[in-house]
Length: 279
Length: 302
Image (cartoon, rainbow over the protein chains, first blue to last red):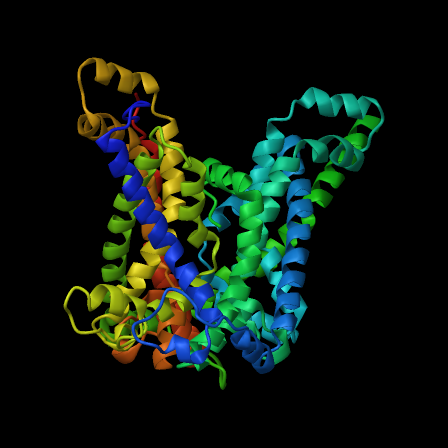
């Protein structure tokens, strides 16, 4: 629905004012977080609260790094994200290819089983998962953090399957006649064609895993194995007054995803509009 | 003969292609779901082996557990508050962005930022915005400017849940806006042109074309939001656990379903009971999913 033309109108002004107000509300918490993280303690506790800093400082960041090994947590989180992203894009596209173009016994049943898991909320299987990981002796390990998460690849497989399904069979047959085996077809024919899907899946997986709280929260108790969200949640529960430091931690936790988002926002917004996928 | 061999070989490779994701899926998704179902009929904590108790856990949840009742009541308040406000605001914003305006992409991106921000970080930010007394931004610039006394948002039994609800609307809005924007693209432009020829204004077009034709998307987003909101966990965990030291806040004022389950499982170690809770909650989620399927199938034609 479109109102107004090039002509300036009252309606257009109302629209811009409403959108400006929404923008302000959306950005204010971020601004307040950043500004608080560079305020000296006296300025944080001034009254009334001020929207600018008089003497910017990096003191809160220094305090934060002195208190917790944030660098280590970032490395933990990045490592976990990268492992899961790599597995997801390759394993999902390989499986997606088999589901889209191969004929084999039990294909539809297995695919439906995968799909049904999209409806399963984490709370239904977190207790047995935790007990199982605990009995494997995988608590506080990267194995424990990464491997169970790989089981939730149904969405990636579904996405890849839908996309690969639309690739013409002729293309695959031609490669087969030229003597390609299935793995070569996957690598030389399918992969180059599904790059956009892989990119979308990689970005979403990264954001999802970077922000993931529950699973690491349940299986990690050791200080050095925490991920960024867990560290932030724990820090928050221990902070009652040093909000400068808490905001510094929040800035560190938000910045990587915001960069990824700003770089790839077209993929992300298109991906959501197409699939209803949640970041 | 060679043909059969070829077929088998081809099938072997198909199975090889899916075997790794499938095994992981079977071990870490399917098996726990089934195990959880069996656990729900047992009395099981870290100190003793599971003991079969039949439907006792379920009976206790439904007929006796006052904390569960409180949690469900709060969940309903949360869903009824967050979903309609979130959907209505998102429809309005999506329609506004859909106009002939500049900076479309900028507005979409800004609205979407909170969706890519982790709920933990968002909760931490809002904890500071909701800070008590006159130091909190919301208290000073909204509550006190309106002439009220400052509210101790996250320590008060009345205001904790509303504070979390406000934060959740903020956090989920952009996602809904994107879905509605996509929905708006499917409405044929000729519809509006025809209405304009008939002399329809902004409101008429909104009321008689946009809303009816956007209805499938509205239904879909509403039900999806219900499903997500029903299972809210992280903001409750961070915003109450952090301020009162107990999940659900002072006197369980903001305790909802999933955090209650988490509390029973990982703080109180009642694995059997928590599994039964998981299945009770799962039942409601499935119910919503089934309703969703029904509605999605009966899409409006135009």
